[in-house]
Length: 496
Image (spheres, rainbow, N blue to C red):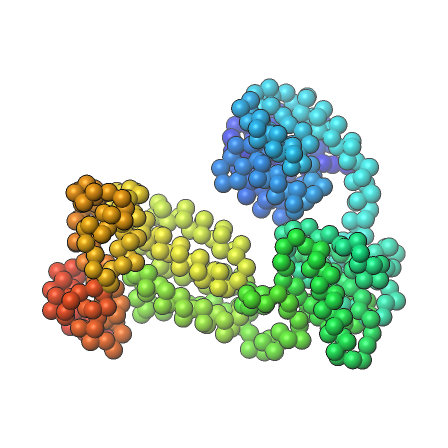
């Protein structure tokens, strides 16, 4: 029996020492991966079979305590051992409380003691693991058949025999990162016949529904089943299900329909139950591989431009309902298009952070809101980066101006908002932004005036009022000063 080990530590030298200085293979262990923080470790756990996690306590992004808590929630039987410095003992105590089984002092690195500690822990788990492996093997065979990966129904397994000779079976899928706990009071005839976790946040259930010819009674039975399953989770879950059938050979088709139904959770955030019979009406018009392409002619020079194009994009995505892979690609392309002018150094790191969070969001609406906010932040950060400023008061002032540009804004208003005296703030702003406050306000107003002028439907006087100027003449003067062209020249250029 080989025990797979994951090492989690942001210290590259320590990871190297752990990997190379200990004869893992001689004692039945193998290092199958390394991570520099807890979030990366969780991503590895989604893809690889790991039995033991050795985790440092102090790490960026997600520390060892947070990782231990996440592991014990997602993988309750996984072994966690804390790697601790002398001054991390508070973290160690908390990780032990959350389920870590031992700790190793990094300053007293001793390969023999580490192996001895792990062997003692593994002996306690070996018998239980052997029983679990047999059960897991049977479960995996049934799951493989249900998911259409295997053509042979595993007749000899206990799990499979439990599904035989049932009146009416149905497949239900649920998305939840918490563990499922069947209610004790559900009754033997009402608990799921088969339960398996098929992904980091995906649960598969096979249940039995009493046969009935009454559509009302059938709906009532389905609703009761859904409520029982939902009560087994600590959080609110979204569930996909299909019509029922009494033949186990139809389980693969039922699974496919339930999975298809649950795909629509991205587009209907307020819904919790997705039945294939309801969702199938969208299948004919759906374009699963659709990716929105931002037209080259559309301006993307301000947050308002981005919001307008993003609204158009989400409407198209809602119309075609692509699979999540292609949906995410549309947002990534849009984000890249909007931030292509942002300085190279900050763009690469921000893009990675943006994508990591994007793919964790579960609905089209959440992805759109997050994307717009990420674009706004990228543009604002670029303003400060170009001026060599990251002053909190100045940043706060810029955010205030962008929200209130259409109103009368004075130096006193902004200084009061950021909590500084007028003179001090005025000097600070000019020093950090390389221009005075009035000049910056004019730039923001002209930026928004250009967006309104693009529509061709608003009079110049209306645009002036909308961006905070008292008349068209004043707007025209400021517009030429900022852009180097008149309003009519700007409109003519845009219309060509």
